[in-house]
Image (cartoon, rainbow, N blue to C red):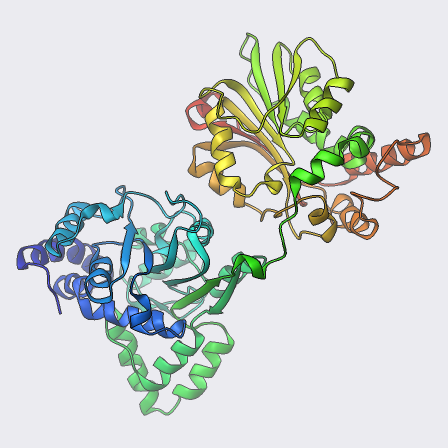
Length: 553
């Protein structure tokens, strides 16, 4: 059933339908009408409810976000027929001609305000944490710039207890739905383009696709403790294979013809078993519930920790091998700063007891360095220990009082892992910088001793860089350092002795402790790798300034 006016149908067929006919060889009229058909929305809604053991009536009054709302048909039908307070995001850049204008007209034809769809990307959702009860997305994730970041953002804006479903292709399977042709599982983009060319199709569209697969998605989600994965869609795949119970939207008619043959040959059951064993089912139907806050481990109280421990940790920050090695990595990055020929201002956010801030003041010529921290004890330690004419320490909660671009360099060392909303803080660092941002934090598996010193997370490799790029910060040089001696070996030892509270590491360091620390530092500095490991240290430049900066090899 299609409810939009015939004039809009004709324009959708002429734009969307024609565009995808050239890719998939599916007739433009079928392709255009399929995306406007309300029956498809009801199928999607039934699948969503089934995945979470819900009834359609349970949707009423819920606040839903559709990531990639296209023409808005899903939003419109959910509002009209299910009583859902539905919203969508769709970026204005990209797509085909007049797509956004058509979406506005379609929503108006349903009597809806087009502003329920926001011009935004899934990588940077313009909503506060916990804004939605439900999140849905269908055949969109593979078209995004950074699918892992899109999932991160979706989970962020989902309220605790909320439900999220993303449907997208599995490129570990044997069918490519955009071209409606067979596919060889796990092809790279380059080989995939060659394969598509063999079918007589233009391979350029492959460059727009993220070749998502089951194992990649599992890897993205495996360390998340704030969600529970209900299903990846295996049971739905089995049911569709054995019962042929699916509609022939878009290119699925081709799949259904193949399966008719398999049923007649009586091979569909072993074929289904094999595809499931190989994780070659398609599509992936990722169904997730966000865990209620009370189910998780209580977050550490960073304010309490860092108001009482700085005096215990001062020598550890000065002489400890990890801190000395981190300063060495920071020093390597500082050599990449492009001189301005005039005095500059540097802000160290989360300066703690000031050792690293003092290091910055000593290393950067003609600079005025300000260290800020919300800990009164930390700032008192810093002021009592470090005095330079170009160095000052200020106790303050935030940075809202500073104007945009107030500092040539913004630094933030071993802080982001302690912050509830690291994305908001990173945006603030970018706002304050006129040129550079330099940050460090741990990645990889979070050990219990790290939670004891206030870590809320350890980042995943690439997680920060992807977000930084999305807000206009380009990498100049990036280290994932420390293998094998710092990480995993030294971090595992620290976990055994609980280094944040052990008499071996806190308090005043004896000469013997300083000697041992110096030896361990030497091992880190000279024998551990800079490009492999779990300690992140990265220098970024604001995009407007990137043209004058040479990237690291």
